[in-house]
Length: 106
Image (cartoon, rainbow, N blue to C red; front, side):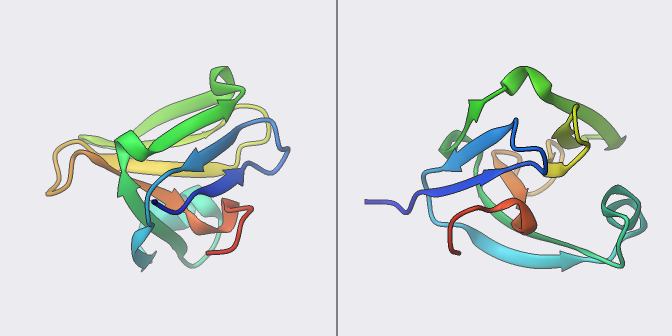
């Protein structure tokens, strides 16, 4: 059975679960991640998009195309950065999850 990891935004309104092992943990230092997170870098782990389920308040999940094909998703209430994906990249069926939003051990 795959691992189940749960997470949420700062205000707790948007919750999600990932039913697959998280992989490819990275610290991104690009300027767009710095701006999106207000920090020197952002830490992400990735999973197949099909393994991600928004379990509460999906209507609050907002999206912003920060570069051609790159979509960043965040809570429309508290602003927490949650996910990003690259439809034009090498892994268009995968999504990257902000590790700091995880609620269960990883």
